Image (cartoon, rainbow, N blue to C red; front, side, top):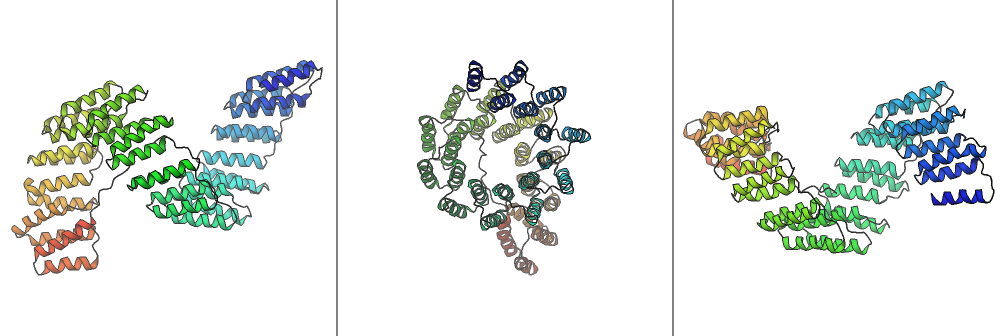
Amino acid sequence: LKLVETAHADMVSRGIKPDVSTFNILIKALCKAHQIRPAILMMEEMPGYGLAPDERTFTTLMQGLIEEGNLDGALRIREQMVEHGCLVTNVTVNVLVHGFCKEGRIEDALSFIQEMVSEGFNPDQFTYNTLVNGLCKVGHVKQALEVMDMMLQEGFDPDVFTYNSLISGLCKLGEVEEAVEILNQMILRDCSPNTITYNTLISTLCKENQVEEATELARVLTSKGILPDVCTFNSLIQGLCLTSNFDVAMELFQEMKTKGCQPDEFTYNMLIDSLCSRGMLEEALKLLKEMESSGCARNVVTYNTLIDGFCKLKRIEEAEEIFDEMEIQGISRNSVTYNTLIDGLCKSRRVEDAAQLMDQMIMEGLKPDKFTYNSLLTYYCRAGDIKRAADIVQNMTSNGCEPDIVTYGTLIGGLCKAGRVEVASKLLRSIQMKGIVLTPQAYNPVIQALFRRKRTTEAMRLFREMMEKADPPDALTYKHVFRGLCNGGGPIGEAVDFVIEMLERGFLPEFSSFYMLAEGLVSLGKEETLVELIDMVMDKAKFSDRETSMVRGFLKIRKFQDALATFGDILDSRMPRKTFRSRSKYF
């Protein structure tokens, strides 16, 4: 702005009379510097020099206003342009079409084009491309394809921008196969894809866990002489890490460096995260040193990842060292940093240190959230300290943090563990009254506790209520109910019916409970029922022909113990294993 003002003042002091081109250059410079108001004032000075703004003056101002997100201001400038009798060119129309599309006002853009066509305007390549891009950004890819057909009919060949817009739009909708088809059309029409084209597809394929297809596409990219960039490598490395192909990801990382493509913070953070999730913390620290020596700055995500990794392995002191290092390095901690360490301290039974850290978090201007409070709550509930747990929920509410179903589910679990089932049941009802959708986490502890107290009718009533009014029961729900019914909680026929219900809903019975049921059926002489149940379970668990024959062979000669032992070993191998899901990181 100062430079433009100086140039303008210098011209006036020298007696040099500016012309329209001079003003246009100065106005364009002001718009590029986001000084729209001074640019408009400069246009208003033009009549004082006996000059009238031209098409370029108005269009430059419209473009500047649109870039600032002020489409209405641009439309007012257009009205002035018409009042001045200035000729509207394709450039002017295209600038406004771009403005409408930028704000997602596609219908207005189409109406404006129709209005301009009636006044003699002929859409050009830029008009069509702008429309295609705008439609794709708001998810109207079908309409965008129709616009491309119109474009072809009018004699304009779609270019790389057109195709990239369509491919990006389809990828955002998850329609990868259709996007690949557009790529094939692009190549058939002699339009060369660029790095953006391939990166869009590779990134989407990796997100869809189609890493092999993404890798093949990267090979095609290289074979056409297009060099993969950091975005290409990052997408592939991320896809490989997420699909547990870490060794291949590291090989690609080495190849990336060999080919002269410098890894960035995102590359290093992904690999450090994968190493930490595998418990390979020493290797993660080595990569951290390499990251620093390569000139990549560590950021809050890097530190959060390392703190999370050390906490998961119960190496809390080292996690605290990394936490302290953040301050030395001038890296601002965020809520994730604090929540991760607070959770780690709680799991290591250092709850007083966790509480102090929450106080520090508040002093640094960060507000504790559900993750913070739920970590402390979980500790107190597991320790059986219900009073402190209730205090946490009270503090949470008074500080404007609304408890969620995880909070309530944890507290219900704590109450049941402490033998306070009636209080837990009342809390369950009060949550329902608040309109919160209940999950198995809230129901399961109460159902389990009722069964343990042989209150089978109440437990089953709660289970049926859960099926009608809440989120569907999970594997743990079925495990509690089946175990309760088999462990002397009800008639044996009810347990048999429940196994059938479980299987119909896609859940497999736990063998230890099934064994109790089997013993009961044999003792009552109901071997045929047992055989039918075993057949149903083997079918649902997808036993191989060989495995099925082994079990049936023992059943046929009435060696029920041998049959159950073989059946149990195979069934246990089919049961889902517990997996640890890492806390998602936000920035």
